[in-house]
Every structure is written in C-alpha cells, then in structure tokens.
Image 1 (spheres, rainbow, N blue to C red):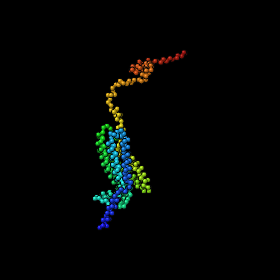
Image 2: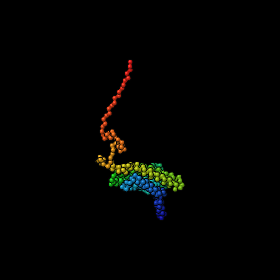
Image 3: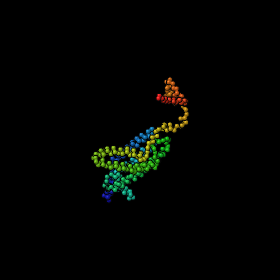
Image 4: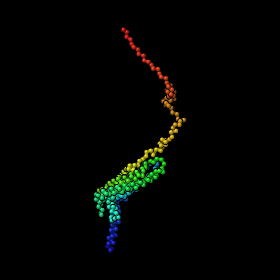
Length: 302
C-alpha cells in the first residue's frame, strides 16, 4: 500500500511539473508584444487625432485596450505548452487537447504531432481566433458607437458599425493574425535550433516581433476600414462654408474697390484718363466714320 501511494504521489508531481509553458522566454515575449502593441497604437492615436485627443480620449482608450486584449490572447494561444493526463468528458475535447498550439510545435513524450494534427491545428486556431475577434470586435464597436453619440461635431477617425467591426476583427484575427503568428512560431523554433546561444535567438526574435506588431497594427486598420477624416481638423473652414449668404450681399463701407485699377492709378499720377474714364463709367463712344478708300485709275493716252 505504501509503495502504491508513493507511486501515485510521484505521478501527480510529474503531472504538475509538466503542466507549464514549454517556452522559458514566454513571459519576455508577452511583455515585449504588449509594450510594442501599446506603443504603436498610442502613437497612431496621437498622430491622427492631434488636438482633438483631449475630446476623444475615451475613444482612443477603447481602441488601445481592445488591441492589448487581442494581442495577449493571440500570444498566449500560440505559446507551446506541456500537458499530461488531462481527460475530458467528451471525445471532441480530448481530440482538441492532443493538437499542437502551432503547426511548428515540437513533439514531446506522450504527445506526437504528425502532419494531420498540425493541419487540423491550423484550422482550429483560425476558428478559435475568429470567435475571439467577433466577440472583441462587437464589444469594441458597441462601446465606440455609444461614446461617439455623446460627441459634438465631426470625429477625427471614422467609426464602423458594430457588425462591420465584429466581422473585420474576426477575419483579421482568424486569417491574417493566425498566419503571421504561425510563421513567427516557426521562426522562433528555427532560431533556437540554429544558434547555441539563447541571447542571439532572442535578439532576432525581438526584432521580428516588433516588425510583426507594426505590420499588424497597420493592416488591422485596413481590415476594419478605419480611416482618418481629413476634414475633421478644419473646423474654421466649415464655419466659412456654412456662413449665411446674406452677409456676403451686404455692402461694406470700409473698402473701396476700383473697377479699373490701372485707370484709377493713372489718375492718381496726374495723367489724363480721357476716353478711358468714360468707358469705365459706362458711356458709349460714337462710332468713328469709316474712311472710304479712293482708288485712282491711271488713264493711258492713246
């Protein structure tokens, strides 16, 4: 009995020790991704909202928090892990548990990943991230439209509808982000296997992840259809266009505009204007008499 209990205790300890993330640099990668995501998102908001950031700070905050949450879920979802002995009630859950988190994840004891499982993992991650994107996009779209109703005037950044935002986020995470992070995980594994020094692999991984975040932030706006309104910063221009026409028709006594500046300038110099003044005043000149051309024919004497 005692030996059997010891075996069970050892087995439980082994299971607990193996239920951890297989990548020792996961925490570093997660913090790096979060810092790069926040930096790129905040920089874009400040660059495009400009002076209106004080009035639209809540809209910018919603965007930044949504991007942070989606990035954390994506990074956590693709991180390699180790799991042993977990059983579920349904066979589908047990089947999904045996799939790798990314198509380039390394096999380990009691978990052998063949080509079929890796292909299933790719499509499973696409569906999983698509559901995450639909949920996050719907929540973000509802909050943005609710906050935009309280704003006066034109917004500096266009806000899509709730359905368009949800579908855009779902497609962005399920298709584009899934493909990018699958390739990124493969690059990380290749760097670790190629270089013996972990610092060199982390350096290349850091550089690639920063570029990946910048590319993802730029493409995310295109997938969602978010654009900067160029007319939002020109409130004074709108005031001029919306000015009533009655003010234009009223005569102004402060300015004198000559109908013929050249003629009036010559008058100031003391040069007689003559006929030019009469033309400027609207007087019509009598037409000049047309001269008749007299043709004289030479007569030849016979």
